[in-house]
Length: 251
Image (cartoon, rainbow, N blue to C red; front, side, top):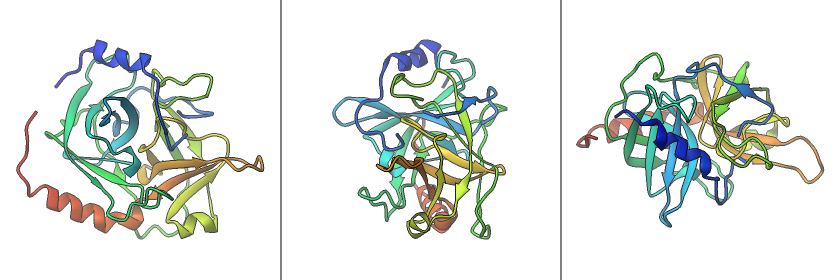
């Protein structure tokens, strides 16, 4: 389903209301148009009638991954998007079912991962294609990592970014992150409000899901947290296999 550009332009006038756990891209730059064809923007329709946004990424023709705290009453998924004022080539899907991780904890955000089954298969193009997942066999911290999103970059600019932004991050080996099955970066640059659910991509594979940002009272650099994908590969496979056995609803 092609998306008329006015529908996307309307996103610009909406602020991201309420709590946003991954506090847009800070310290980043505009991504080369359609260089991240796996990226999706999620329009979250809440039970109280409000709309909020999260990031997400395409795993295959049927599933998108995002953060469990991005759960909503319903979703609209935008594929092939770069500039939210330009709907050329952008397609839209709804979601038939959401699968938050069975062990997601809304208090400490452990296992902050969710699968969304699309209402109909995504059509792969140069602007729409999935990303591979990091494997359990990868033991050391991933290198050359990137975070992307349309989130709000600063408190002074609370709106969604008009274009997809990205930033390079360096993962750090911290015990408090390892205990909670998280990857973490400790720097000012990183995700911000509206980037929750986007991927942590390292060497071309998605290793993490943008979860939350912790700002120490001591004034130390922010701690950006990503739910570890390699730790839940078995759950991902089992959930997708089970969901695909159910009848498919068409757009």
